[in-house]
Image (tube, rainbow, N blue to C red; front, side, top):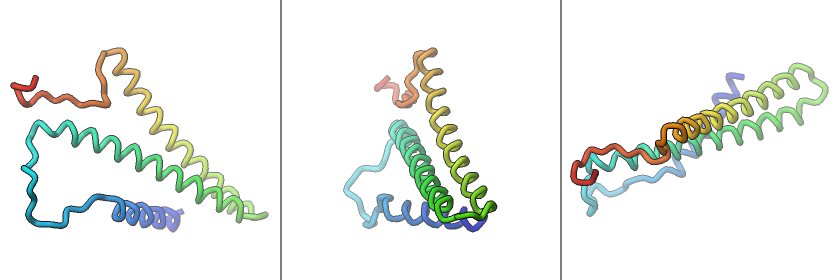
Length: 125
């Protein structure tokens, strides 16, 4: 199991490296970020975390399925593959239920957790 998790970390690291935006130039014509723009940072973090959890679950389901198909008659390998599949599905269910619980709490409180509105700029509130 340790070998599988190390491979998984390498795969996620490589995917993150290739799909993350990189700033190449030292000089930028864009103005520096303001403190009130932290709302977009939180929103981006939530979307990246949810996408990463979905991608990680998908990859682990594929790996578990492959291990299950190649296990053959080996009972130990079949049990390990079943555990991998069940852990991936349980992780996906936990992530989805966390999102659903936040939506439910937001409905009862009248707060939309998808959009963080931290009122730091008094002129914009």
